[in-house]
Length: 150
Image 1 (cartoon, rainbow, N blue to C red):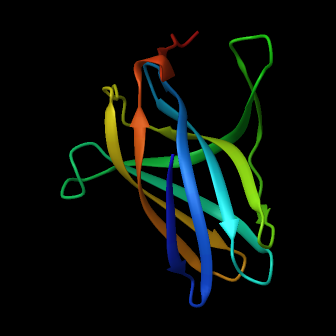
Image 2 (cartoon, rainbow, N blue to C red; image 1 turned 30 degrees about the vertical axis):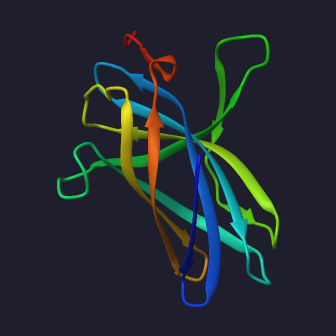
Image 3 (cartoon, helix red, strand yellow; image 1 turned 45 degrees about the vertical axis):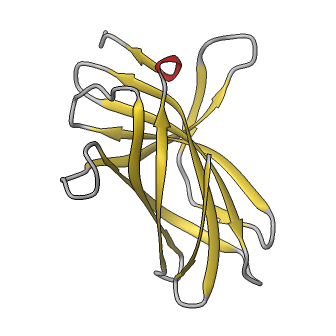
């Protein structure tokens, strides 16, 4: 997990870390499950309304894969599956770490080889401020699986 600390949205400071939990490839979509840790270093809570993800397969000089938020997920204890729930706005509490697991979807169907990828994650708050984070995401074989569409 890479922590990224930057100044965003005017005078607002937000730190973020992201870890790849799973990569799922179907015949029609590529899914990416990420666990986020956010630290709001301001004096007020921040309501995040929108989040986007760009993943660069060959460095930032190439066109990225665009992922859109799909749903929240949680691991089911004692099973290999995950429990999914609808995505809704979330609030970053003041001076506390907020953890959330989100699944993203990409309509560009391709495998993600084991590697470390440059990524950009943008979150937008209720006031229209944008928080852009550049980070690296690590994909390992144990995270990847294929699913047939049935």
